[in-house]
Length: 56
Image (cartoon, rainbow, N blue to C red; front, side):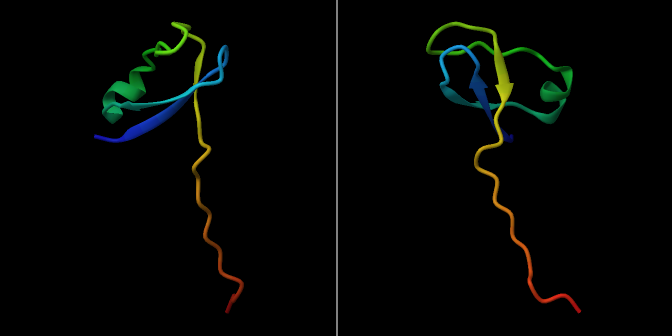
């Protein structure tokens, strides 16, 4: 089951949530475990981009 990160817009805490793709597609809201807010957005902070400088 994939793990997604969500950022609380109210307190700034990043929370990991394990949910299936089907659950994610339903768009169910998440509650911040720190402040109880429902103002959560998906966070993409740990993205790694690999590029090649050698194009043929």
